[in-house]
Amino acid sequence: MITRDRVVQTFLDLVAIDSPSGDEDRIAAELERRLRALGLQAAQDAAGNVLARLEGAGEPLLLSAHMDTVEPGRGIKPRWDGPDIIRSDGTTILGADNKAGCAVILEVLQSLIEDGGSHRPVEVAISRGEEVGLVGAANMDYSRISARVAIVIDSGGPPSSIQGQAPYHYTCDIEVHGRSAHAGLEPEKGIPAITIAAEIVAGLPRAASTAKPPATSASSAAASSATPFPTTASSRQSSAPWSKKSRNHRPQRAPPSRPRPRAPPRRPHRGPAGHGLSRLPARTR
Ligand SMILES: [Zn+2]
Image 1 (cartoon, rainbow, N blue to C red):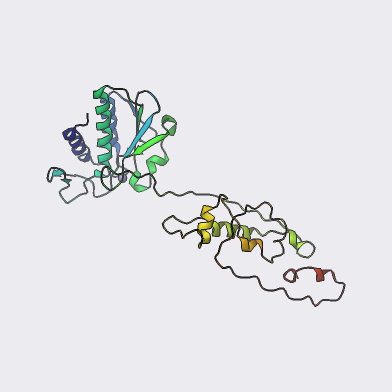
Image 2 (image 1 turned 135 degrees about the horizontal axis):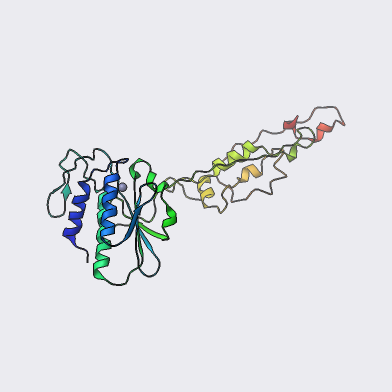
């Protein structure tokens, strides 16, 4: 059973251990000691993250928090300030981010063990260096975690709130290859890599908070497309010499409503009659 006084005391004990990012050895050792005292298999991975497992039946569930705090976070002196409020003395942070999460995980484990009922296997991952760029999470030994579902106890808002999504980013290295073609003999077969790259960038979805309705926004249309690198209708209809052929490899999507600049009109050819260039688009000459 969850015991209020016990979880509060655990929290007070944990915040009394200095653990600014990069200086987590003491708190890591203490968390490992507490987890082992509960009977769990607990150890630090090569990055110093504390990993543990409580055996159970069924699909494992991962509980996660981070052990480091921001500055000024040394010599924290917590004090009770009313029945439901704990503050620092004002000279430091309190360290609730994320010692509160650590205390909750310890209390949940202890409660499960004391209650003695059946439960899922519970895995624990308490990371280092979260406040300076998720360093511990990035270097965590994930081979020691089998859970496919995790609860990360580290967010603002009321304690009962759950965040189902969070900002994230992907980093991609994209190499774009065009297709070369002789400018005089077969320009229609050429595909400039820079044009493809530009369309990829233009088609990237924007953050949901800034995206416009699909009917009025090219970027939203791109975001709602099933294709990662959509082309635009206007580019497919472009008068560029490569537009009429050689685009079969490109995914297609609904045309955007955003107006795009038109290509300049072709100039009439004024070369001598019978010259081969007379059959080619003006811009290739
Ligand atoms: Zn945090």
